Length: 293
Image (cartoon, rainbow, N blue to C red; front, side, top):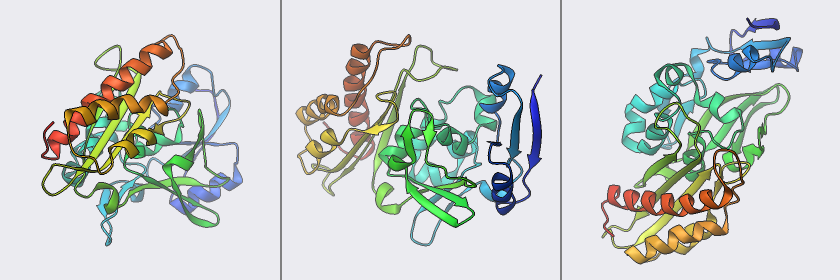
């Protein structure tokens, strides 16, 4: 069923790094929800695999002394959704990954695998972009931290150097404190479907809930990699909270997104739903933050 040359089982992070150096062509496998499917389709015939699935040190969510949220790369989608820290401080991410596939996939699929695939449709990606996530990589030269905007290079390619594995995802307190967001996945079906467009918005309001101190909006499937709509973000910053602002914010996303035609949706349709999803996600984020339009 699976045509593989060899399977190596890493015993620790450093062992995984050593195996990567000894077998540079080998593919890292965690939950296997992507790699094993590809192997069954014959796309990775004769592959060498390095399994890191038993490395429990890469599982779980914690808060560091400076308030940074740390998500281990082997943490499953299901655990992220249920985690108390995520539910308290980063609910949007929990809701986003709860829309990945079906229950079986969410139980075994990992956030590390979701981001290392480098695909623009990953349900976690737009929210991680909107919260300025940092990717932690461990390799032969130690630990390297890369802003997620730099981690994604092009469609299907991320910045992982020889010998490195992704070990964590970091979100600073500055990125999530007093910040409320909402994720919209537009797909042809309600379950078990890849996003036609993913939209993640978050806002931080003034103490009196009348002014937008900061807004973030990020998209998946609006370009070859996930991206932020910086024009819309700059437009909203410091502005009084009004229904007109929500409309202006939503329309401004068109300045920065670059969707394409595909069998799932035409470019013009993706542009249309990007504006509508941005408006709806902005309105819901404001509501969650205690404001009103």
